[in-house]
Length: 260
Ligand SMILES: Cc1cc2nc3c(=O)[nH]c(=O)nc-3n(C[C@H](O)[C@H](O)[C@H](O)COP(=O)(O)OP(=O)(O)OC[C@H]3O[C@@H](n4cnc5c(N)ncnc54)[C@H](O)[C@@H]3O)c2cc1C
Ligand code: FES
Image (cartoon, helix red, strand yellow):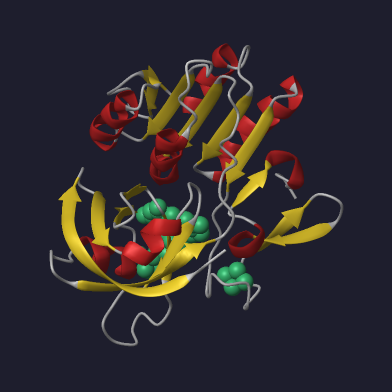
């Protein structure tokens, strides 16, 4: 798998809600080889502060020339990215990690919470679309309606059936998105998930119980993103450690100890 360090050029910064920004980046080398579920390490400043690059899922990749990242502002690095303007340079390393295995032709369910929705749109755009392929149900959860309006429409454009849930009840089900999964699971061949750890723990548990394949994209603090610092270790099954940046971020749910 090829990885590049590329000085991308910001083409657009779209504000989807108060805290969500979508950056479109001209990055032909990375865009040409990126697969759903992979990520980039982005330089979040022009000085040595902050020193470390930050990891971002590849949200979309277009015609092998541009890619998008979805940024939720939580600290210095993400604020820096949200304030970039078209024409600015942004150094990226990627595509990194192992992505989703989206080859199934049976019905699938994509379930994302919060910023974990980011990699699922790229996945939805890559699902097999032949007439023999079955449905794609997408379950999207967030704190409030504003974070979901644009994104849910985009999944619909890929032919997915979308259901939503919000913590404040402003859109869809009032409560956790994982509450909607049991009704969808019968008939689903595979589930793909990304979001808060608690949500994915519930999703993985339901899938394991029903003997349905599940792939989960995990988050961890990452210093290098390249398998060198060992800072992103998590507990794997069989008394092993897995490194999210190198062995993941996408794992078969059975490979992970969800409550170590
Ligand atoms: C594989 C992967 C993919 C990711 N994809 C995306 C994405 O598509 N969009 C997006 O907005 N974010 C994504 N993230 C999270 C993103 O990398 C962090 O939000 C970012 O590094 C924060 O940088 P900052 O400088 O803004 O915040 P900092 O100033 O570094 O931190 C602010 C606060 O957030 C906490 N924090 C930082 N990173 C994390 C983390 N990974 N998990 C939990 N708490 C954290 C810090 O401890 C601190 O309290 C991803 C992370 C991983 C590992
Ligand atoms: S982030 Fe350094 S090994 Fe994973």
